[in-house]
Each structure stands twice: as structure tokens, then as C-alpha cells.
Image 1: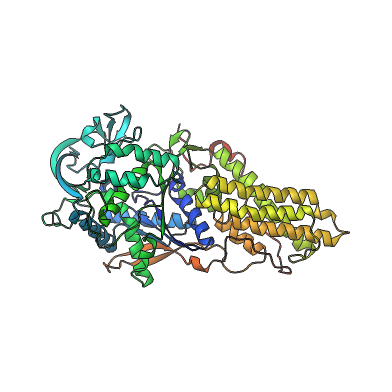
Image 2: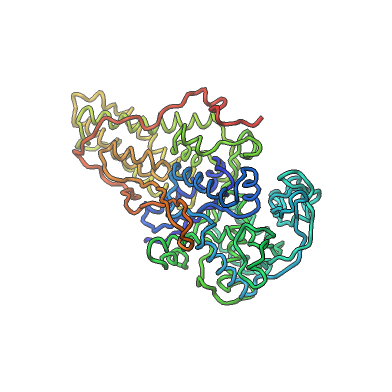
Length: 596
């Protein structure tokens, strides 16, 4: 049965290019999932964009001698190009500086305001003594007053998970220049998170299929929910649509508030660009499912804060209320959080020189090797260290030797001996067993992909590949010159399993899957790729920007075993994956700085 599926992908911050640690959390997992769901017959809407507001943008803009908007324009395009190169099949990858986004944010805020979930409150705000500019909570570090962790941020402690205010920290310091912030009294609007404690607790108790780390972390925070500031003293952000606030030059929504609403605003923008302004509603109703993909440092925003905003908009928090302008919106079906991809035991960090940028990686190794590595060896359930040695091993032995070799020798032998897909005759037990193993894998791999168990899914698909290689080695069709019927039956069986394995691997290796489709004599688009369109802002016509989108309904890939066509002409195949130099496994290429 076809189900509308919203794939909501965390918004990369537009203050610089993204590295492979970023895309291991939000990018590759969300695309593998979305490609499978489309192949399985579901209607998928995959949305995201660049997160472009807040002090970090202003700080980086100063460093590059640009305005905040110029900086956002620069990195919005860089990030969009990198994600296109990686093959992430967004229906819409947009940005948070659009007129559409501003309106959706303000409309949702007004629903929260009318339902009583916004409270004005005076607090001590952190100011940089040297610049006079507000310091964002995440740009202040100190010792956690609860657990004593040295390195807690001003919004939360990653060690104990508790929500913090910058003034709570012991010995707070600015991450920008190391100075001690000055705290001044300022009025802000707060989301009344405690007013959702009961409703959130009841809802979380129904999330039985969530990854245990996500569910336990979220439930542990329920007892300590506190009002959370949703405005900031800043001139770069979405204006607050209230009298006394909307024209204030230094009052804007806090970036965390407007960024999470981007899932909804991107859905609305996508619908408007299709010509059916109401099309987004299909993906936000109780009949739809919503899957949210991010790294573990964003769990609280997606498992507690975003659901609270949705409940408040729906008039369904502990205080009740009436649905806002968007009606009743769906809460997340699942929050799919990955752990951290580390390097040399440390979290990827541009500032610390521990970084491999996506663009560099794609240029030298292509997209599918990275997609595969993240899927089978990435941080799905625990922090995972990226090493060049492991990357080389996975690429050479699994992609080149196992999968690439199976495709190459199967197609090459059929091309040399028959010139086309050969006709089978009597099947032996070995033939039938291999074909049944391949067909059975669709259920196992599909179930794992549906539940975002990517390592298990990829491993099962590769078991089919290994079995097919063993089958060819055991059956030795190259020795069957005197028995062409048996030779052709073996080759037909191998090619059928190549076709099935290609389908199983398509969500992970969409670029290679297209090549295998063509190697088997197929034509047309097997696995569609995203494209970049230059568009005009729907509400501010003088602004233009690139979006990622694609025509995924035109692809031929379906989640099923399809009998290959006897007699279809075959050409001599080219290698699917190039082997990497083993020496690369020691230090990596010159462009990849390795932390000491």
C-alpha cells in the first residue's frame, strides 16, 4: 500500500563547505532511505535546505569581508553543488532566507502565541565586550554546573544532555575569541516547554520503534524541561510579527526556532513550485509518515522541541488551544539520529584541522564509494572512526573485487559467448538456490531499509553478491565449451542475480546502479539523480537562488525481482569501480589534513 512519506533532512549551516562527517549524519542515510521508499512504491517528499540565520553567519561574514546575505548566498550554492554531486535525491533543497520561509515561520509563531505557549521573560544575555554583538548560546563554552563536564555549550551539555543557559556555565568563554562574555539584562520571548511535558511524555511512550539511544535520551530530558528563549538580540534573522517587536532593529527569532520550521516551509515551497499550493498537506496528515534524519547533537531539537512546536500549533499541548493556519500537523514518525563520524579519534572539526570536505572527496573518489562506506561502516549506532585504510579496504575488496568483478565477468562472458543475455534450459539445484536467495533478500533488505538499519541492509545485499561469485567459481562456465546449454544457463542465472543485486544495491550505489543497468542492456533512467535549478524567490522576485530537485517518478528502479530479457544485446562492460592504491590507506591524499 502506498503511503505518503516525508523525509525531513537536517539543515546544513551555510557558514562554510560541509565535510564527510556532516553528510554521514544527515545526507547519505536520508537518501538511502528515500530511494528505497520510492522504489517500494511510496510517495516521498524529501526536503531540506541551508540554515542561514544567526550570529555564526554574521561572524563568518566578517571574517570573509562579506555581508551576512552574501556569505549565505556563497555557501548555499557550494553546499547545493556538493549534495548534488553526492546524489542526494531532494525533491526540494532550498534555504531559510526566502520570503516563503519567513511567512511560514511567522504564521506558526502566531498560532503558538494565540494558544498561550509563548511567554515574555527577562534574562541575562551574553554580549561580546569587544564587538557589542550578541553571542549565540552555542558559541559560549564552559563547565557544566550539573555534571562538571568541561566543554559544555551555552544551550546544552552534550555529556549529560541537560538544557542550559549561558549564564549557568562556570567560567564561560567565547568560542570566537576566548574572551569572557558580558551578561546584560534583556527581554525575550520564550517557548513554554514545560507546558508540553505531559503531552510529550505520552507521545514519546508510543515511539517504540525508535533507536534506543534516541528514545532514552529524549525521555530522560522530560523532567527538566524549562522555557527556552526563541528570540535574540540580532539584526540577522526572521522578524517577530508582534507590535513592539516587528520593527525592532535588534530583535529576531533565534536560529534554532526558524530552522526546525524549515521542514514545513520547504514542503510549502515545494507545493507552490509544483503549481498545487496544497500538495504539501498530503505529507503532513495523520495518514502520512515523517522521518527526520540528523546527527546526535540535534536529537533534542527533533524529538522534543520540534514536536512541542507542532503540538502548540495544533492546539494540542497541555494548555490545549486551537489549530493554527496549517491545521493539524503530523508529529515525527521516527527521529533517525546517527552518532559521530570521527577521525583519528576526534570529531570532525574545520577549526581543528580534522576535516575532509565533501567536494575534495567527490573529486578524487566519486560519490558511491563514500555512500557505501557511510552505509556499511558509518556511525549508525555508535561513534565510528574514519580511516583511510578501512576506506581503501572496503572500496577494493567489497566494491571492486566482489561487486564490480561479479558484474564484469558475468556480462563479459555472456557478451563473448552469446553477444546477448543467454537463454536458460534445465535449472539445477544450485541455480535455483542462488536465485531463491536473491529473491528472498528483497524482503530482508527492504525491511532493514524501512527501519533505517543501513548496515544490516547493505551487508545482506553483499551476501547475495558473495554467493553469486562463489556460484560462478564453482560452476566454471568458462570450461563449458562442449556444453553450451549448461554454460548459457549458468550465465543466465548469474546475470539474473546481478540484476537482482543491482536493485538491492541501488539505494546505496545509485550512480553505479545506472551503469549496471546499461551493462545489462537496459536503456533510460534506472536511478534518477538530482539537478540544480536556478529559481526566483516566490515572494521576493528580485532574489534568485539555486535549488536541488529532480524528476524521480521517471526512474525505472522498483523494489522487486524482474526477469531479465533473453536476447537483449550486451556490450563489453567497463570496470565498475577502480581499485585504490593501497598506500592511500596510510595517510590519505594530500588534501586531507590529519589531526596530530
